[in-house]
Image (tube, rainbow, N blue to C red; front, side, top):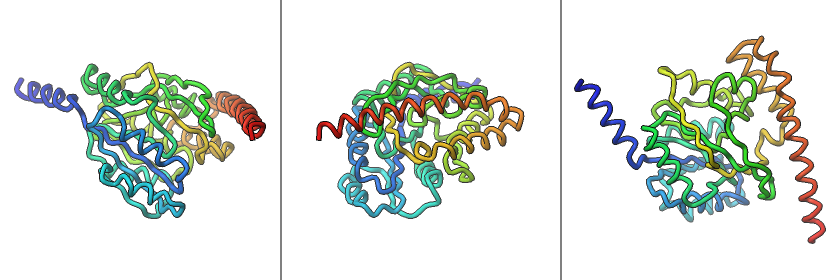
Length: 277
């Protein structure tokens, strides 16, 4: 009874005003990094530990970071072995109750977003994983769609991949956050999701029905689309077996259709911009 009482009260304390570690990974991101920094620092929820991991930028990104270093809990700039190595550095530096990633160009939709998310955390007795929708933005910042999450399950990860939930709209308890596998260049987050769901006892998750992040397209996996698809199959084969890999092939049409639509929207936006010039 005493152990149960202590556990319940520790959980209650952990849920009250939890420290949220927000990690931004960037390399030569001068075009977007300041917007992301300002967006995060201007959240009205103040129990934030902001961490920036720079991959040795040479375009002026570091100068921008230094302007805000008195409000950044931790930052460093050094060469790394890719984005997942950089994210691992962020996880290791984090000391908050929850960890989330908003990389250069990403942002919260509103100033009150994190306050709303923390309210969900407190009302749901500190779940292990909290996830919500994401506003998908074109490379020019145009809203393409609101990507609503599916249930965070291995079944959905296998069939729909990272379409299950947007990486920028996930908060995970630091105590159960695994490191990323650096065996992958593009789909490390999919393998990471499987690793989270493999934690014992099974993690408890809560889905939020509003956008947690604005996700700016144009990252590495977005520009190397074919490689992205192939690596997704590699992850599924390793985590769920060859048979699951064969089953998932028809579902690859979903990201292909979405990709075609995105290209069409980008072309239209580019033509409009050229006309204005």
